[in-house]
Amino acid sequence: MTAKEYLSEIQKMRRLLHSLELRAEELRTQAEGVKAIRYDGDKVQVSPTNMMEKLVPLLVEVEEEYGRQVLKYHEAVLIRIRQIEALSAQSAELLTLRYIDGLSLWRVSKRMHKEYDWTRHLHGIALEEFRKKWLN
Image 1: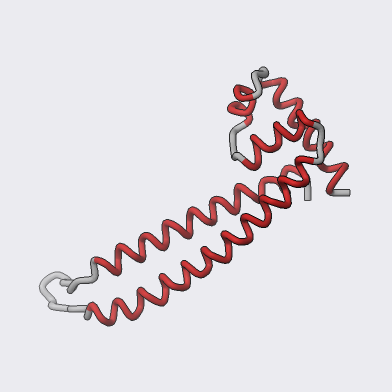
Image 2: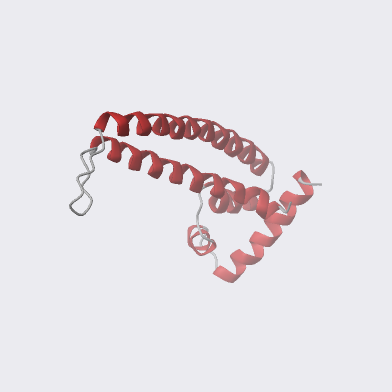
């Protein structure tokens, strides 16, 4: 695994958390709006109780998974912050902005008051420094 892949796991975890949040919200909305359903003249009704019996366990499962993932996320962030802080000041700032704060390299360059191409160059140096210190 490269330093970039290792550090990018934080962003993947963020996307997973966001996805679980959306799924939980969708299930809550469905549970609140359970009503009878009609299909083209055929009167087919779904009991709100039956729908709730299906939706509630799904919602509980999604929320439990969300809780597990939040714990994993915070643990991973803490580990990476500690690793990044052990690097040179410039590398630590750049990698924190890029991978912990989730900024694009363009935004990192603006925040660090550097040209984009120079920031890209420094990013490569910082990743190599991280790799040598933590991934060997």
